[in-house]
Length: 253
Length: 253
DNA sequence: TTGCTCCTCACGTCACGTGAGGTGGC
DNA sequence: TTGCTCCTCACGTCACGTGAGGTGGC
Image 1: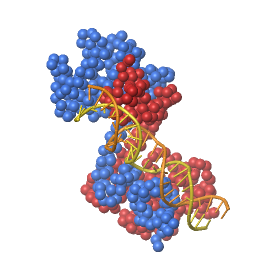
Image 2: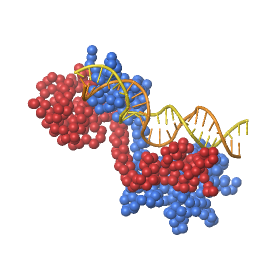
Image 3: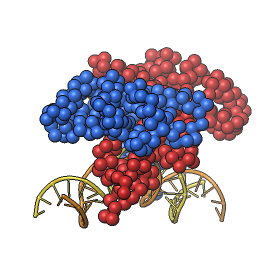
Image 4: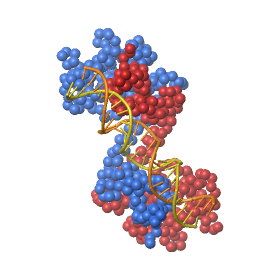
């Protein structure tokens, strides 16, 4: 009879927990070749060989079912690792952007601010976030700026919401339709453009060409105005032209 | 009666899903101020203001309960964001190391190798991983190297396991005890050192000072031999001295 | 007899996705 | 009557952690 090891010994020598070995047994990833009469798991040397591969592949961040498929020959390890690399690259970039933004907020928060008030918090966010109204401020007059800062404009407490949540969302929806090949005259596109004009008017007031500021700000600084934190969006110019042509149709039907 | 919005409208304008709004309602993060007679959720403008904050904080990667605590005043946003930054930095570094290792494997795999055999896969892993036996090879003679490569040495298929899984684990355990202040003469430490000698002998054979290669390799290149992918381990020299002194006690009791 | 290890359920985690089955307003 | 939106369960996800309750060998 060749030597075997029980869970505790295997766990001790490998560094994985007993529970983990139980789990890998349950899902069929690593079943001990034998069971004792008492039901105890008995790992053979071949099992340890397999355990080695599982642990090594897990260190590359592969999901357990991929590891199982590799071991069963159902998946090519090279492809799996290549795919994994792609995902890791993407995650790495994403978390890097997140870190950059966090650095900005924390730095801004260091400047003697109390941050006790939620209003302070919001102000802070605006500085660190690819922020619509931060960019927009340059296009507003003093009154408008005051309204924006206090968050107590006629539009009410939802003004930041309208500018930083709904506004980017409208552009995302428009971009979605554009990618799907919808014409600028498509009624869904028209509804979006209509809503954009409503929001522009709410911010810009009733002056002639009210709301021109918002659109101008967007054309000049689309990335920030869109609230995008990823570079996944399509070329801005294209989207801007698309929306503009839809707007033309909307104004002069 | 001030205006209200139903879930669908809120979802559309914000970009979060209806299910997400349901969930945030369930856990009390964002409860609509009212319900219609039919039970329909009715979000007020104030609710949208709160929704805005939730979304912005979520973009910083904060867990929902932290967001709730911030909004309730139970947590200082500044601290929460600072903590979050620390975690994100750590995750960023960790995923960067993972990426580097993946780049190495994938690059090595690109060199015309089939990777159809599991043995090939293992060989590959050894190249990309901070690997015990890769470093060790420099210290082995041709016979030993051949045994290691074939994985069919006297120790059997578990040789890679012993060298790359159990061996580093022994050092981790020793380091653990050292940090806890255990004396080198502590019986737990002595057991570990005894096992280290066993493994050394298995690899080095019965020659005088058999197994000296493994220990030598470890002293020269502790990071790789330990299998550590993080820099969290304590200064190697200290650990090496600790283990050496335990070994002295073990040999000459 | 006391420890120690082993076993099998089975719930909890985190933030929702995804149907299932049914109701109300145009 | 047909769509559309709304509702409330309730299971699934991913890889285990963490008891709960009980058994077998030294």
